Image (cartoon, rainbow, N blue to C red; front, side):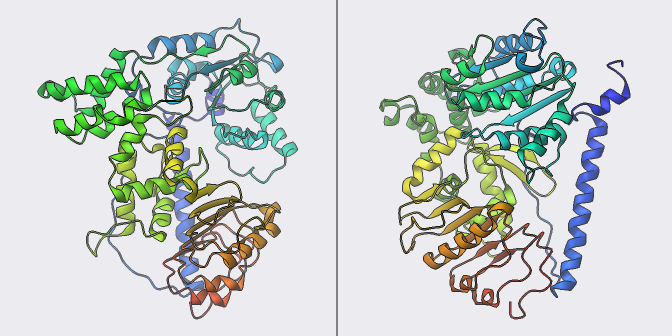
Length: 545
């Protein structure tokens, strides 16, 4: 079959620039909107809801569309590195690209140096798009869960999210059928796994591809590179001073504006030298200083004592600390709250605004302001200062994530006030993310008076343990303000939920098993947000709600 045939074009990975793909994606979005409206209309009659009219609000969106996409103009000083990567991908002599012979190249460098940006450049190069049938981008979590990686690969390749409840055998079949005979490129971004057995297991699952398949990994450690790479690893160098300065000036000034501020440029040169060629540091401080033309403000950054602190390998970048220190207080607490999310977690603007609102973080300048307006403004400010990275722009909201170094900064701010992915042992924790398990809350103190936010993630297999876990936490957390139950499947909420007098936000969104809410929910006098979307088993709300 000829490369240009329509059949092959349709079977390729659907990119955003493909007009057919655009129509299909937009069609799905429109159908989703119509389904949402139908559900709202249905709930209106079922729950006897009143219709209220509000003016339509503008939602602030950033400019990036997907996390695998990067604007070429945003990356400076990596042209030679990019060409080296592309040459590797096109080279037919690096193994046959099938089975155990899939060539793997590891890009190695310190955090924030630009490994992901380089991989993005290569991933979106037109030559690479033409060469591979499928291009798959996967952000890898620290625990290197092979099952979750399979789900992410399938989602990236096909766009489907219907496989999250499949077992490994079922996932393997879907993956095998999707990759069979196709020449693919897979980018595994931010790999930490040092267990060679897990790597071999994943690579074996990818052995059904066609001739010419390639894999690129990005990692901070040479040990990971030694495990994964089948060709000499690629050590990414720091940006040169000239390229660092060019990037800084592009972010700190509008085009051509720097010629009007020679003193600021001189101060900026000193700041750039202290960034030592780390792209994230340069970008963060350039974004910070773009809002001021006061020389004193620039000198404060250049002459800060923080540059004199001894910097160890895994320490937070001084540039990130400086940028955080310059945030207004309301943005500091909103940013720090985001450390409750796991690393690489993708959160949407609507979800985050509701969680901030439930915690009382939003500052209203007048009584007519809507929470979503304030939340979107805060999110835009944090995005513009490089604390957030935009993953996707949607119809009603945008999706974001944090660079792992930025996540480390947020964790360091709250220290023992936040805990995620494990059962904490301190009574001072204020924000908590848990994976439901059979452990319950037995390791916790009898009361958690400081706990304000509780997010519990579970699935069908953990239904019983999640019900027990929720009851345990409710009994110990009398001052809870936010209760967010992710992917829950329990059949009932405990009656004791009515004791949470301070609860402002309750979400059981997407729970298809629950059939009713306890009458005690009517005692939640502070409740502002109740999310029941997707709870199709609920036929009516308590009459006094």
